Image (cartoon, rainbow, N blue to C red):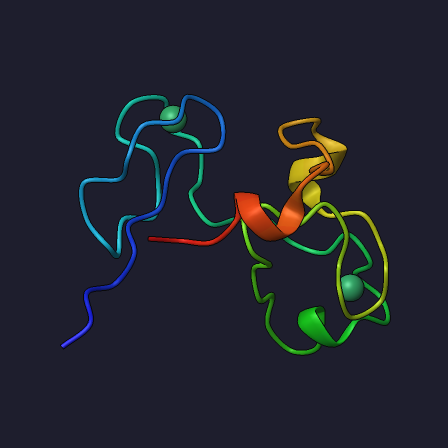
Length: 87
Ligand SMILES: [Zn+2]
Ligand SMILES: [Zn+2]
């Protein structure tokens, strides 16, 4: 059985205590909350907000900036393929 990936707080980089943790236990920032900012016409926001990967600076569906990127919590990677392979 595959273990679910625990989220890492984008703000303080604490690892969440549980796979289903919603907020960072250390700083209280909502985990896994990297949403597309195009609330009007994006598929990800159609009906329910679906979080994008935590490293995504832009929505891969509509090209809008993500909330993490707008808050300057993440930067576009110079080496995206290598950097985001999870172990
Ligand atoms: Zn935190
Ligand atoms: Zn989008």
